Image (cartoon, rainbow, N blue to C red; front, side, top):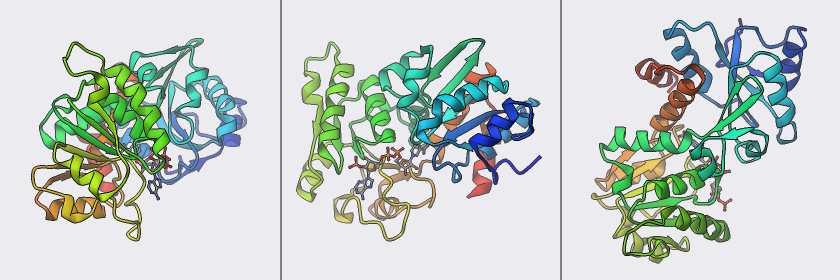
Length: 312
Ligand code: NAP
């Protein structure tokens, strides 16, 4: 058996397995499909969980270009897979190939987990619920009680975060995105999900602001939690997301990036006295929820967390 954390399989490897010509080892019955996917830490985390539960199934990563998603899903089913995780760029396209969607996947408009059950292909989204669990774990607060600013409110992860905050009925949401039109489209969907019996209308509770120092300063005064859902911060040379002098001790700052473990944003926020956390907890919780969907039993969180921490 190759090292499943180090190995990235191809669609041809999956086809060979489905047609009984070798390819991906027969123990592998779960995988993450993406492109690029080689950087994914999910095999280490999921295989630790599967082994701890005494399951014989194993989890691999498979590089799958966007135009081949349908074929890959068919091959995985034919090969006897239990299900799949989906990452960039498949989460939106996958909506169309599911025979059923759970409520969260429908409301978030994206799928990161597929369950194969006979002829059914059921789509789930564990990113949003994973974020809720992560925030509770790292800051000991409930997302629903927080006013939240999302940087990158237009990308896949940022959209999931904004819509999950709306489902949680967060008091205020501030959306910031380089491409502002995307944030406006997202704000409309967020306002629809926020409709409730509160006196304040949903439109007043969701705001899109330009990415300028003055707009950030004005809004940060009423924000509890800042979430970075952009890919900025992965490189040391990336531009600063929020000027250090705008960060205050009363803020919580959550960076979805987990490599490096301390981004410039987290470093600046920590220096300002703010509470900080990286995205490892979100990765853990979304993965644990996926494993529970496939196996219909509780995931061994401690073992999965340890496997991730070992890779750091
Ligand atoms: P994505 O769909 O490609 O979105 C990227 C986001 O980053 C968009 O909002 C984009 O803005 C913004 N962006 C990219 N380059 C930028 C720049 N130079 N200046 C300003 N904004 C920029 O990617 P994704 O799937 O949402 O992932 C985003 C990040 O979240 C990645 O770092 C990923 O590793 C992380 N993530 C973590 C977890 C976890 O479990 N911890 C889960 C999912 C994702 P535009 O709309 O203007 O392009």
